[in-house]
Length: 216
Ligand code: SF4
Image (cartoon, rainbow, N blue to C red; front, side):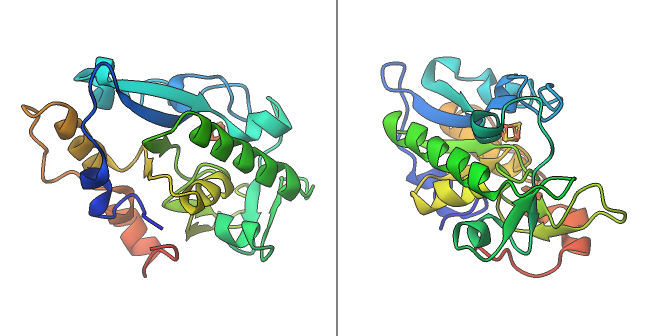
């Protein structure tokens, strides 16, 4: 699996052109779809503006929401219990909502549907919303996110796990360094700020979730 911080990720991508743009699968909420559990865009509708600023003609967004696909909107909140999304696909972990209802099958179905979209659209890479049970890629909740104290784990969501297994490159919207490197591929005049960090390099993650990403 190639994780967001994998050094090969950016270099592996072909050069996009206006006739053959990068086809980028994005979490629906990053494209301002009101597909969050509460019917909002999770406050993320403008999160990719910087990335897109230099080259809208060489990037085609393909939004999809794997949870909305099978669970509808609004819905209860799916979280990972007993592992991450790879563990769910392997039958070693489950997805439950805040009422304890098991949503595992629906989450896997939504993940498979997202992989289908990726295949049909011949996606070059995916930019997904981190810290969610489906779309997370660096950090996800462990058990119900409404528990006090809330617990987190390094790992991937169910849809991300399925995409990575299908060979799709995944970046999180919090991987600021990788997103800047992608932008520099689109616009050679764009200078990457070397102080930018990907999510796994954030001080909170380093302090609270030490150790390697289990899918690295
Ligand atoms: S499942 Fe993914 S696309 Fe849908 S609201 Fe959650 S983070 Fe956004």
